[in-house]
Image (cartoon, rainbow, N blue to C red; front, side):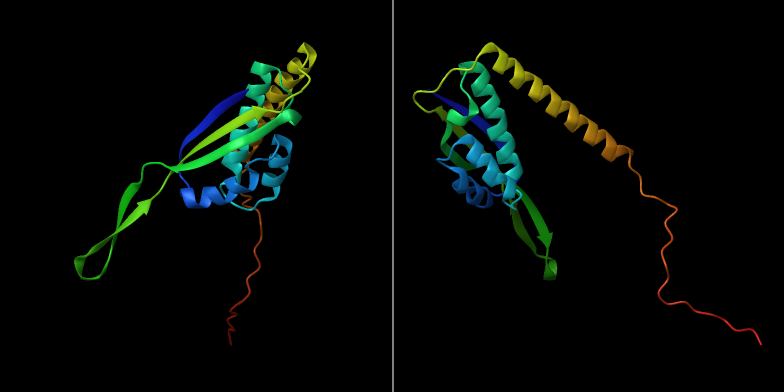
Length: 164
């Protein structure tokens, strides 16, 4: 039993995304998420989101627990390129290609898994709702936070004038 999930038009070059994708290919979902948590690459976050959403979708549709899900295939293809120009000497212009990626994730279930019960599925749905609320709260807090204007910054070089 397999299911495919896609992430299109990711504005990171495919060469950079493939470095992260190769780390998690063939691993179980919990293993892959643990690996991606410690990877310090920009591509780790969108791949984590894709795996997480695929995991929940697959679990709800086929009643498969996340421990028995395996990333059977993770392909990174090139998307469209944005063409930009940089002015150079003598009136010339050089081309800059801003590349994008299409990521295709295929999840499959290990044979002999125990199907989820209705209670466990309800728990998954509630967990997903809690994570969304938490995400919304953190976004609101970030918008509300303003830099404090009452901060006193000490001056390193002070000029004093002496009146005589």
